[in-house]
Figure 1 (cartoon, rainbow, N blue to C red):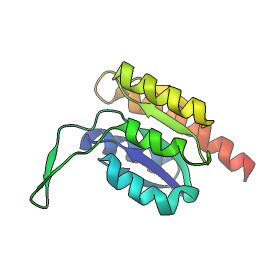
Figure 2: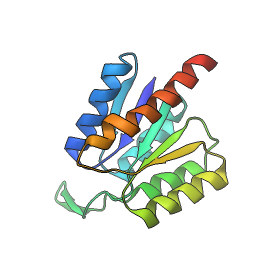
Figure 3: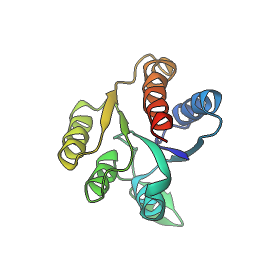
Length: 145
């Protein structure tokens, strides 16, 4: 069972995975820092994901293998998800109000269960309310299984 996170900030990603490992040791935490790699991975693994957490803004273009690489945005992942049958809940964790709202509308229209968490106070939001939302979704999943 996977908890998959789209987050380009290494500190945030580590704090998020740390909370997941502490409370749900049976759940493997996988982090992507860009949308294209995440979408490629999900094309063969979407059915094994228990929960997704998506940031919107993923930073500037990067150099990858000597080429300019665009990391995309969380909206790219949300758009991909709208072409798939809903399989798991999605948490949107972004301070980009407009971008996150667009992701919510896309997921809502396609029938995906989703919630939104607004990051605040450096990493404080990871310990609460983000992990509380993770617990809510993962505990509901274990009741169903």
